[in-house]
Length: 146
Image 1 (cartoon, one colour):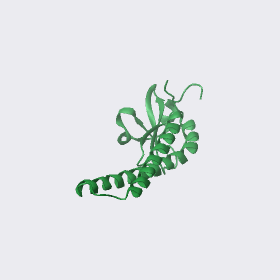
Image 2: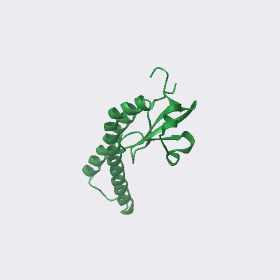
Image 3: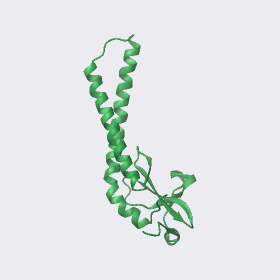
């Protein structure tokens, strides 16, 4: 069952999950760097006909890659357990499902924005972001128990 957020609940939750999103963005960058380093080493091996490489260097990089990937999965699971949707880890983009005029839409937040100030229809994605105005505030709602 989907969880729907009121703006107030999403804002309150944001204080708790923002540090997780910051960590996830940093881990994703670390994961991507390690992946590029491993790919570069692989290309060198291929280009040199299988020449020997520093195995210890590869193991260190592989360890960073695996550790970043494992911790990233843990953080994403934790964020998603709250009912948030992680949309982009490069920018720290999150969506919070809500109901607007009875249809599901998303409250939209990106890392380093001071709060949740936008929403968009599901089908429009980030490009369809619209400012939260009084009309939206009067006609959106979260789950009834919120």
